[in-house]
Image (cartoon, rainbow, N blue to C red; front, side, top):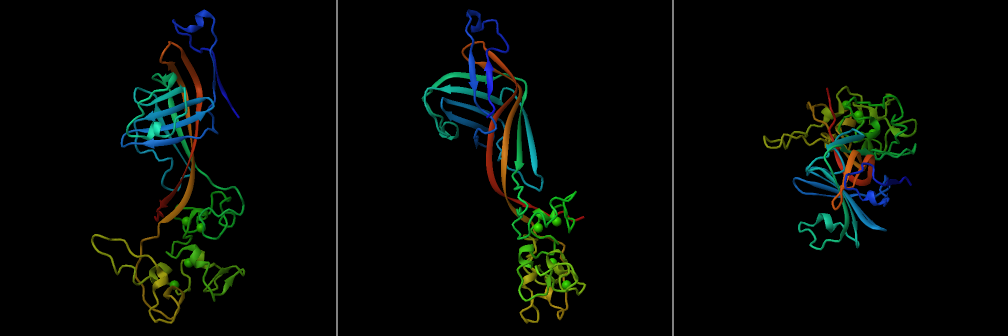
Amino acid sequence: MKKVFWLGIVLVGLFSSCDDGDLIVTNFDFDEETNLQFCSTETETVIFAIETDPNETIFFKFNDGTFTGSFEGIALENTLTYPINETNQIIYRSLSGPISANYFCNTIPPTQSNVQEEYISTNGGNVKIITTVNLSGDENADSDSDGVSDTLEGRYETPPRDTDGDGIPDYLDKDDDNDNVLTQVENNLSNQPMFENTYPDTDEDGIPNYLDDDDDGDEILTRNEDLNAADNVTPENPDFDLNPSDDDTNQNGIANYLDLLDIGSLEVNQFKANELSRSFTTLVIAENISLKNTSSAEVITLETLILGRLQTTKTVVVEPEIE
Ligand SMILES: [Ca+2]
Ligand SMILES: [Ca+2]
Ligand SMILES: [Ca+2]
Ligand SMILES: [Ca+2]
């Protein structure tokens, strides 16, 4: 456990209590293991840690109500940087008794003050909020939950494999060939010829269906064998219903995209979005900050101060990007 010690006064003020020989040693016990929570209003967010032994809290309040501890898109890391100023402040309080998250999250702030000592940041320095996606390093991990492991999906190739070239690597892509039939669906078809005894390969062309954008080999792309995709399109709702599996024109129990007998196609240039359940870790790190004691002239300057980390899970939507 890494600890940051405030050893006395880094910047000795003119009216410092050090003059009488006191050495103030504050054990400042926040680090990357410290659990953070947050509350937001429309215009402000407070990220806070609450400790009980001793009772103390540190928080960063900043004028941005959009903080979520997560982010959209396929990136694996996102960093936000906020300058420390009059509205973006780090505040430390030692307390005479325990508090709960309501201390920060109630619309009506608690009336009883139990603050024993308080430090507030002075202008200068900044806070970095670094959010990363938690991905398992296990070789059998299946980050997109499509039934094919990250290793088999080329996560460890350089760059990671992206079969359909839509900007989403296979290990995070739920529809690896962008044919609008999800990989998981393509790999759970029964009564099909198999590729390497594992994956259905309907047209036996050596490309398993989940990586084959023309599954029956009739030279009509699977996504274009989705004849009813535009049936419910209106000016208000331009989105196609993307599901080649529900088209069976000759009603023989075999969907058109797997059936050589059917003729007909529709140009479909829309693609299923990926909904990925992701977990995030956010580290909050202050850099080059000064904290001033509100009842004395004591100022503490710190190059780096880790406030802690928070965990968030969220379903993010990732749109394929087709050139
Ligand atoms: Ca892809
Ligand atoms: Ca995949
Ligand atoms: Ca396919
Ligand atoms: Ca076809």
